[in-house]
View 1 (cartoon, rainbow, N blue to C red):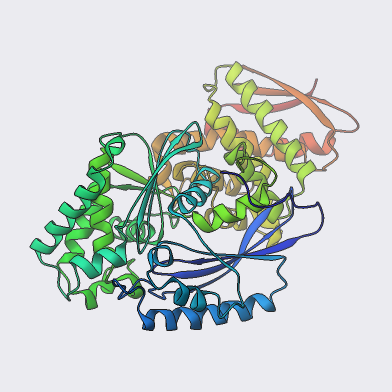
View 2: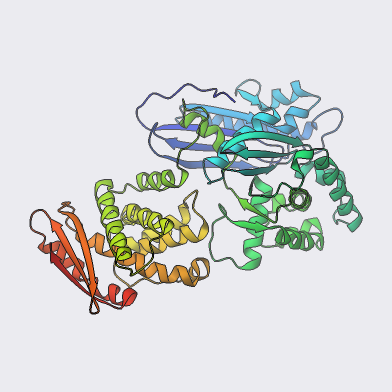
Length: 514
């Protein structure tokens, strides 16, 4: 598809509001960004409008339109006073399929106060795809987006959108048609599965494709949160979570065992989604079974972010971030005001130490480890934004809570643990040992040595250390430093890391001028 927006002119910080009027939930989100720089979600207003509730042959129900109009008036008032550069408001399948479209648009525009686009099924899938490929490493696979009114499944090849299918299998629509009562019977759920399988079965290219699948939308995020709570997952992060199909089936059984009015007692299930999540889960599980997929990767971004990326990345066509992992690190470094010249020198030195230790056979050179070490070095001072004191601890929770799109959960945990381990106490994988595993805990100690020594060599922020070399013999690790100016402080500081070297490599540390 061709971008709708002109490239932004360079300049100061800007604010864009995106309004997504979905079939179940309306959301207004605000992005703060600098063209060519960083971006951040800074506000969100959510309302479970249930636009498609009660829809029939005559169109959307008057009560639904009244709820929608009330929310849109609030959104319009917010946008009028929020200092926004632009507002991009869209609506999807409920409005798209409505017989009373004039009445619907009167409600959704607040009588003309707000400009609203009705997205086609292809446009809806396009923006969801942009949200996914700009926040994950998906190159080949599928994007599944289940909303209140419909499901879109997109095929991605070489990071490009190749094919799209849309079917009217949304969570609200399927709940009203198949599971309208307080309790869901086995017969009703079986009928829903057969209907979903029949709808999807009409799309031959979907059958048994397998491969990687990424899921977006409120229903799949809700299921992921429920599953995390059920298994006591130690990381509070949805983006990148791997949700197994058998886990979805277990959640289906738990929800079906309770009346709709009591399902919100299940940990992770919001009250305003308690009645529709069961039907949504059945549709998602059926789709996974038809495609031959055993787990689905959760993406917390989607259509709203896709609309933002179209503007942020203009005039790029298609609007794709070239390297999602690198961009996510640099974006976070800018948000947390990291001192980039210092961070880049620490990264260069840390990777130099890492490579020298690999050359000596003290560990195996691993491309992914180097990337994690680079990320941690760039972000090691992120916590200074909170306070210098204990900034290694502040950085740990800032990174875990902000997340790093494109990084797997064990990688995110490693970066955060490395940031915490760059000073003071010796490295420890707690409380994320179950995420990084035994091999990760061992790697943490080795990588932290590289980061700690690099930080100490750059202690004065003068950039005096140009390069280094290492030698290992007779239980000793000797680092020779080539420096400009007086390296006394750098050598003294780096020597303080002898305990970390001893713990990770069982060697004594010695530093000297080259």
